Image (cartoon, rainbow, N blue to C red; front, side):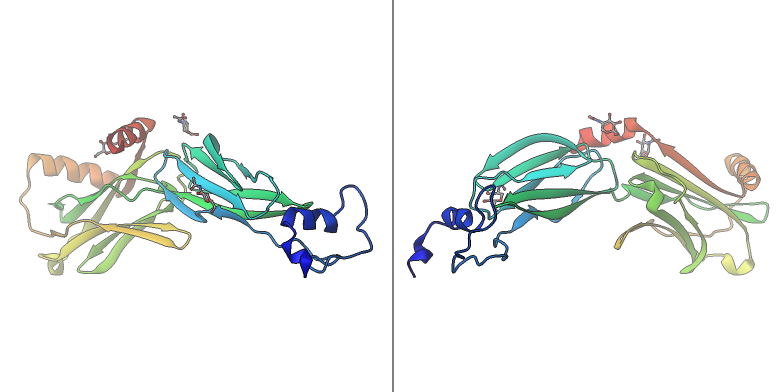
Length: 260
Ligand SMILES: *[C@@H]1O[C@H](CO)[C@@H](O)[C@H](O)[C@H]1NC(C)=O
Ligand SMILES: *[C@@H]1O[C@H](CO)[C@@H](O)[C@H](O)[C@H]1NC(C)=O
Ligand SMILES: *[C@@H]1O[C@H](CO)[C@@H](O)[C@H](O)[C@H]1NC(C)=O
């Protein structure tokens, strides 16, 4: 078959004449009505990036015609690089927790697309449970979860002797910055609590990707009253359970500065 030796662009032109209906002599390789075999690829298909950072996506196509694939996304673009059949796009300052980008290419009148997902998250830098304060027949636990993103997907759990005694979901917070979270929880001391271990756990539940961090265990001891623990216990009893959230662009900038 001599037609096998024809360069592909010629075959495409034969099968899809510009501006007219298909000719009544079908080519053996591209029969009438059949679509042109070509692919569009966007890679990587799933990228994980620290909030505020940038990422490169490569949009490529096997279409033999000199068409440039193009990218559509709500993320901000930076630089681009191109080569035969591909364009690489930089997406900068990714602060949305999850976004998509679409790569389109048109080959002989047919458009195809490929999709990539870009997820921005940061696991907590630290999860610290302060030594429990015992005052007025109660223990007060204070757990600090620092520099995480996105805070709305965080669940903080306190465990005593391995059992969950309290958990709090922060889904009501929609911030777009790194966050510090402090959970305060007070409970009545029982004799059986003495010398039990307590731990604090942070879980980011990101649509299937689960990121866990835990504090070192601390022991429930029978501590004496000290002036500071008295003050802490009183303030904690007023705010029986509390979440304190600190978010700031300052901390995001600092985090990026230390990373680069
Ligand atoms: C983009 O993808 C194409 C085809 O897969 C490859 O040839 C090219 O080297 C890639 N470019 C970059 C910058 O990775
Ligand atoms: C990154 O995006 C955030 C939120 O959209 C914005 O407040 C910040 O100014 C941007 N930073 C840079 C360096 O463009
Ligand atoms: C969060 O905590 C870190 C370390 O503990 C601290 O450096 C940073 O300033 C805090 N950020 C905010 C917004 O409070």
